[in-house]
Length: 136
Length: 417
Image 1 (cartoon, rainbow over the protein chains, first blue to last red):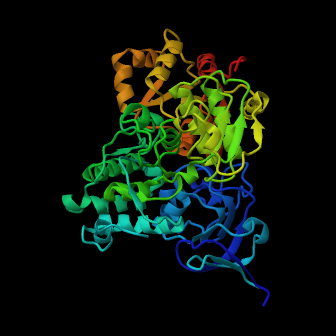
Image 2: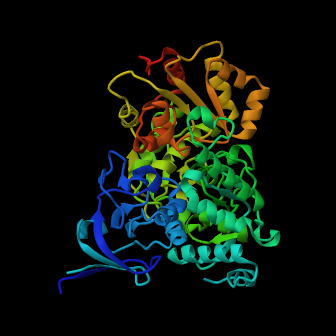
Image 3: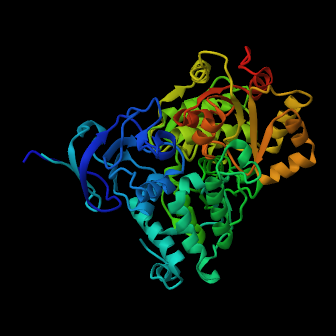
């Protein structure tokens, strides 16, 4: 068993396992995404061109405006959402959007979470425990 | 979380499903941020444009609007952020009937809930200015940062569902910027120059916003020697909030919580970062494109005040915008009415400009209307707008209002810009 577990703050939503998509950048649903194609559309974003649908999305902090609070549920309703959001720091908009969408969200780890998970890793998120596990 | 008896009743569903949803939303978010309880709010500013809502969000609102009046009526004065569709102008812009119908349905649902359709992001200038110490639930980054910083009121960013929850209950979780401790400054910037115009004030906000490491970082700016105007602080704050996800700044000698900065820091006095004019100018220049082609000029983000509209009308009076360029300015319904009365609309429209009421730009299906109109190269004096539109297929350039108008009339980016 070669898995690693990272401890964050108690999060929102239920458990999910999936493939990680990790970026050294921040996150706003309105500013960064083409929500119809399911890709990052902001040219200077670290994940520009990447498809985020069904992925465990790992990014630094929430940036941008307030639209994400409505948008996450809208994306979930069209099955065009990430499977979970893992951030170093969420802001209220991320938390409100995740709560309204019932989308798993965990933040506030004791390490830079974007440094310790790699794109492609098989990851399990357990928001009620506040944990993110990289499966061996 | 400690709840009042009224809150317990709402959570248990005794006051209907809307207030139960509201309490569930409050609890999920409150627990995420370790809030001990909730705080009563005086007013709510609610963002909900159809692009953000989608069919899913509109159906959610319609479900609430179908409840009995007693169960669906908001409890505190609740006003709205700009619409995504100006129902008087959408066909000219290339927005579709589907977009307009989503907007019509949203408006009908909100009106059934008792929400006042003010359709403005500058409610703190034009509707009901917040008061020092007042607790609010504001859901626009620009109105939040202005209310918190310039007025000393207290709100977090309250996105649509949470603003709605605050409207239904009259309360919001007590965390973040409702708390004294969070409102302390933890980074320090200083200027030895003064921005000339709104574009430069916005670029200053953008530059500081880029330095912000999280929502919880509160900058203090020193070296601003006399009070900026409301519009200057509006542009500075809107850009800082947009680039930084920042809900509060302090400005020594200007903002009400920063008259005496001795007790303002959360810990030891941070290292002072000098903001050099060259750095801000570099940020502005970073948006300069390779050639002088121009498709559209937009004044928005935030909506223009009466004074900004007066300035724009003065610049356009007696002139003609090139047929190669579209010029758009966005205002609130109140300011549109004033602009009509005072002849400013005639000056702007007489030159060939479009004055849109109750909308902004980037939340108007900007990608789609860009494609429908062949708009790629855009000029604006809003740092916030150019930041956002880069992700929407535009090539935006930041310049003063004067340079934008010169360019619109010339049909290309003017040399002086």
